[in-house]
Image 1 (cartoon, rainbow, N blue to C red):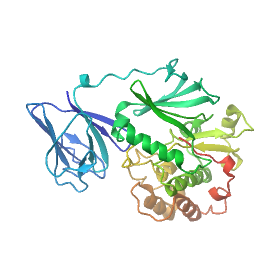
Image 2 (tube, rainbow, N blue to C red):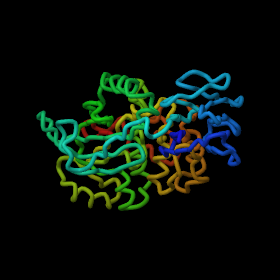
Image 3 (cartoon, helix red, strand yellow):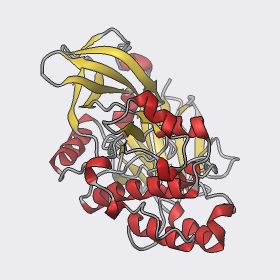
Image 4 (cartoon, one colour):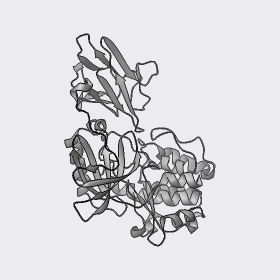
Length: 375
């Protein structure tokens, strides 16, 4: 049965079957057959119709942000073909016909000898977009690497293999930053698209939050200032969005401590924390309209006020920020914020508002060799 695969801003993938002889309206209103609660989707945005002969059409319903088909605006009902890319505002989607028209992609598992060179040793976690493995590169002196295998719909929704590979090439060509994970290759093997990147000995920032709960304000600002240095670098050089969700940010110990001993020290006050490294990877595989998890959302997570997703509003009030600090956070929080200045300016302004401007957490005062970010 034909289906529509929606790629939502929080990373969720929703599959909508399209039945013969039915029309499906899509919009932000819950009364629609395809309800999409996204800011850039109109209350009554588009209609998909599958006729009795099996043909499927998409039609824009005079939406505010428009509907696109393979990048072109939809001005009248347009027929859909297998693999067509759709856009409803800033929500990406892909139209697929019968399952039989597309050969199954083999499941990748620990123990596989992948792409003729990578021995997959351990799964590091699976999301609705990809699964990442620790692997040994047997054909080079690189040793350990991280291999990320994507679900087929993710690369298709990002514009297809060729478009995604071009974005990958732009990331590789950009000036390096000590905080960005070094990407090695993006390729395809037996129907699976995959990324290899340098291996980072670290744990997700989410593990820190689960271990100790909310981070004191001074520590949260210290972490946020380091992230800001990387996001500002990425924007300055036209890099794709950075996923700042705690599950995607790696935090690694300095060379002087073992990972176990380093984790124990994180229970101490932030001023006694040892040297650490944060790592983030550009989301080159996502379409340009994909919203990042903003720095404001990460700051809420650190302070113990987790948002429900990157497109939501911050909590009504975070007590430790005070009235002025909460106003600053509200202005910067959303991905579509029009606040001026980079993320480093945002963190500095927030620190001044809460009386911590003298604390030595500023990204500009940190040794770049000790401050790294990756995905």
